[in-house]
Image (cartoon, rainbow, N blue to C red; front, side, top):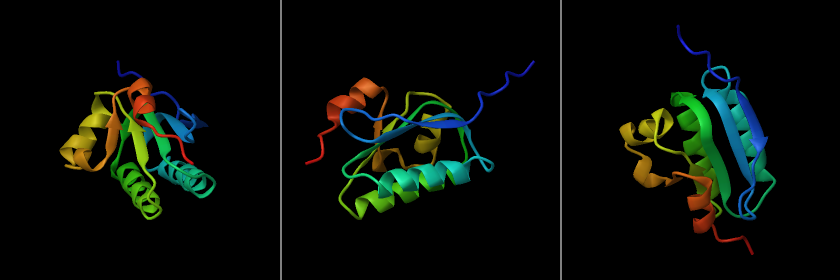
Length: 121
């Protein structure tokens, strides 16, 4: 019997003074618009690095990957970073298989990401 995925959800999850979002469930065709909207609002309404916590994300499709790359590009225009918390697993493998893991600031835990963050001025 297949396990039912957790329902999709996004919540604020700041880390070490940086604004952040934590995502639960599957980031797919149905949920990408909400995911992208939340990322856009966080980028627009904050300064400094933005943290994206994918520890509880169970699946990420190409649309979700595109939203993450778009957020990274928007932040880079302002010399801001997108810090991604993503432990080893299916979502992390997508970054590796797509060949973009080296382009991202990926951390296996919130503790690792927190240690790497420098608070905004």
